[in-house]
Length: 139
Image 1 (cartoon, rainbow, N blue to C red):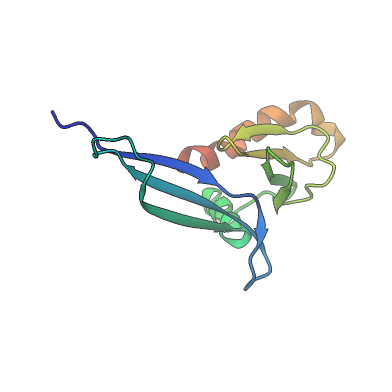
Image 2: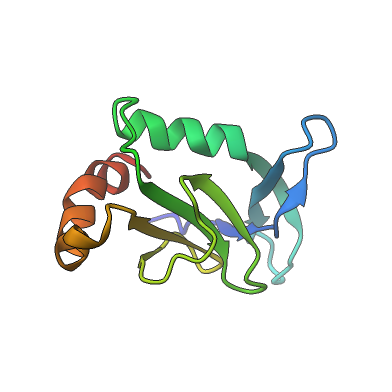
């Protein structure tokens, strides 16, 4: 049995502004360490960087809904470490009640529906059903 000699670690950056598009983005970096040497080293063999920009995240969101995003759906990606956020859909400012879905150690999605007061009580049940495709197709 050969021991797995390569170890992976993932980390994500904070939001930054893409110089070319001017859009907010963040990157996920995957590091691969080589642990095959006799001495434990933290030498990084390779790393891959995936940039996630706002348009791309919005596209992924739209695809999850078969390009039929509901009017009134508010989706915000929030950096848990510094509370910076990126609005992907709807009006994210001042979402008073929202559901949270942790994406990673650093990021969470806040989502809610603006459906008017008469539906307020059932909103959460509705959101869970509506957002199910987004969370189960991904990753």
